[in-house]
Length: 498
Image 1: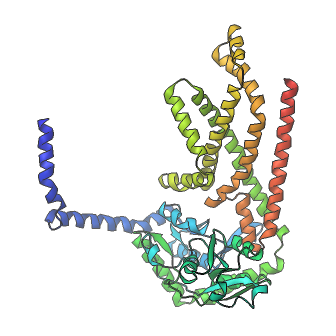
Image 2: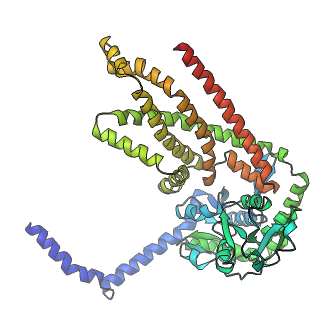
Image 3: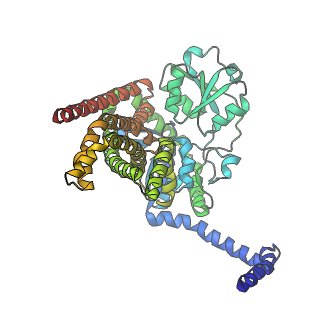
């Protein structure tokens, strides 16, 4: 006790000294911390070169900045910012790796270390400067309205949208411009520009506010759309690369690349014309049928996610069902917490938490594996309740009869209880499997190339919104209908065996 009092007294005496801002010790510690921080900051470029890759995050639905095309049946990322990313990686002497995701997920991916840099039409704003470090700007443009050509005569300026609905991509400068400069208009945001264009064409929106180059690209590739200058004030400082806070050495390297690009005017003279040529060639040969490989790849990944998640979900479900039925209070409590928490939170949030949250600790966690983990955990909670209800539906006399015949507890469960319970819960398990197949589309938010992700690529590449969605609906129906027939067949076999 005396020792504790002496220690407390020493802390009280030392605290003012340690905290005094004018003391030599504070100055020395501050200087040491600054030097340590600078060393850490300067390590970023070296780390990139050591791993040999530069991971660039972008949202590839933003022509001519970045968009997708097909080359020999494979997805290829093109656009002037993709060319800039390649030049940056080349200057660093490393390989370029592109991660395509929703624009509003890019900052989270940067903060959690999933990507090294954002090169995706990101405007420099004071709010964003609080979270990231920006390079020098390499491009700037006005904000344009994209409207249906039939509304060309009545929608002529920003005031024309008073009382109307204007869309913008989530997290962009344009979404904040609508709120600040168009208070009498109703602003609505979505993650993908292609989804906004679908809404525009189906008259869910009266107009979409986007970057000038992108609006012109959509209008040039769709005769039913029209783009014009909004003449809204550009409050941002141009477009730049975004890096994690403190990555000074990587920012300096990026500025060297941008300086060279700007001095040679590569963006306007070479890269934007190249992007325009891609867009023109696609307009001539762009048919939905030519993108069948995209849908095929999406089906492959959808089935992989579903099958693996069903397997692990069933194992987890069985385990937690038994834990919840257990008389052990600790096991019962753990099972209840797991089941109620997973059932009480949206699957999309769980997917993003696993990828960005756990993925921040395990940097090498792939998006596909993160998606499978999240879907399996979610499925396990629902399967646990299905199995529990099936076990409890078996009369107690069945257990007593089996035990009276000399069967052990495990034998009773394995040969008497579980077969009957499985027959009772088979329809519910089948429904969970079908739901899981459809819910696998949610993993597209973290860049897993399943069916919905591939559909969005087709939308961006073909400038068609509704038809790719209709094809995807048909594919999902075929998959779920086939699966339900298979489940119905086995259900009939179980009844016959019974």
